[in-house]
Image (cartoon, rainbow, N blue to C red):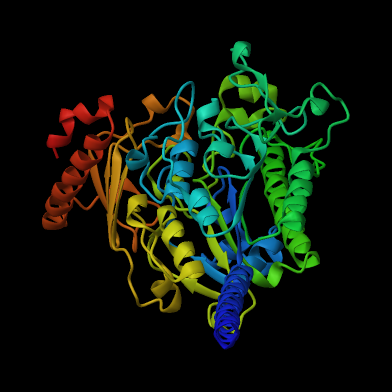
Length: 512
């Protein structure tokens, strides 16, 4: 009997040890889970506002930096406030002066040729990369959403929901009418016209052929509010606003009945820029109402420079549109040319980052950074701000982390950059010097093939920001020209090794 009693005591003791150990492990697991949940809850939301065909100095804050205006002249007070609450980059560049390549570079952190898209996405072309900002932030516990313009592929395999976005509301094509939500360009080719408004993979048929449709901006603003409010985890949202891209259809139509065509064009355009600012203001208000503004990083950037295309006259002056008249003739403020061009007007863009309201960001508000940076730099920078760790090597990023430059203007992150605008020459910047090969002056009209400037040019952006080629420095700075041309040719060969394009066989490059 004594033996059985001892055995029972032993078994009970063993059971207690197991129960205590189990309880301890459960408590540790729960504590670890709570810690992980708390860590996830502490991560800031990230919203990238990506506008379309917008000049840097459309934004009042940047016009002020250039000495072109005062704060009272600004039609963009909400965007200006983003800069006042964060950092404005005065020498920020897009990776490409065309829609699709610019967007693929932003999302992948790679040059367009490295990501496999060097021109606009049509037919069977699209974002092939499986790893991008959306997939990365989703792997970090974020909910992901895209609102607005996709333009990275129309077929099922390239759909945003297949590329890391949990939710999507917008259009797959490069542009839609803001009231019919129809892609209707080129006008002379109606077989390509199509109704294009989706939520995820579902066509929003309730708006098709509906005369009571609201401006697309209202739908996007409402959907952004919905996604922000419903997010139950940190939110990564790519807010791709298809403005001021043609057709120029502002929320508020200016009174220009008796004005000249040029005055009317300017008034409509500025009203369209104001529409973007209204959308930014609404976003800020919705974040604040949801109690999320103080824990949100907001990035603002345009995909590339201003468009002079005659299609901008659509709905303003049909006669000028049909004649192919340049829209807002050479109105790009401090810069030369615009969309489609590697002149500064095509690639230098407005860029702002606004930080959460936390003490560690207090010294990063209301300041301007003058160092060169490129849109491919956002990915590694945002990842580092959120995780304090580099992006995994299998993402093959080509962008640089800008955090040290944001902290100190004297810290140089990048001194050089090479743009290969396939079929339209290239540009290579090294500090203040910029080498151009066969640039196109897109301000001269829609027929770009007629507007190439053959040969090489070297300019000093410190003294010739407008890139007046009459002040070409090839002969004056012969050693710099020879060195930069050789470096550019090596980069050109690397670029051509990544993608097949007829321009890569251009033998004229060998002749200075």
